[in-house]
Image (cartoon, rainbow over the protein chains, first blue to last red):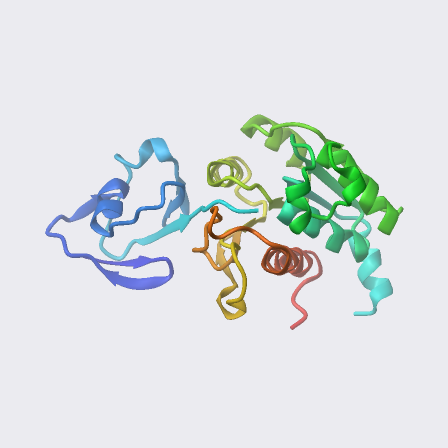
Length: 69
Length: 195
């Protein structure tokens, strides 16, 4: 599946037509625990990471929030 | 734009700053120096000696609450800035109550879960409000790694990867760079592009 991930084209190794955010995090092995996630510019809240899905050509943003300030 | 004109535009602007630590105190001081009208600052914590390696406080302020101490320091630099200081641990509701009328909101928390919380709150409840966050500022060096990344109205400033820890502490130069870049993003949002 080809998507835009954080402003860059990304090819995901999957046979599924759509993926949830949690499936993407697992696939990409993203390990930071605090995230801001958007699909096509719309915020996805943490409680919906198992529900919200995207498919071919969608624009996905995963922003890591890490400690320090 | 002449500095006099810059000050005239900024005089009518309100900026909300969530957190008065390394990022918040330095963002606030930079904006105060250029003549921002109103700063709404909030922090629940007191000043400790270990904070003085990066935060805009003085040795004789150790033990004081950060928000009112920062207000005092800001007004010693520029008495014309109206500073509304709140000693409070911000919740999503507080963020909306305190910051919904601001022109720009600055995220200046220490902990990742608080950064996530304010981003979720502002993006879901105030989607048109610019939010400037500091992410990735531990250690020293690596000037060329610090950048601004834009996601619609969310601006992420920092190197995006250097999390603070015992072995990678937050210290003045890098925290100051990120804070001043955040203040610079705020000015660009308020004044328009210059460069």
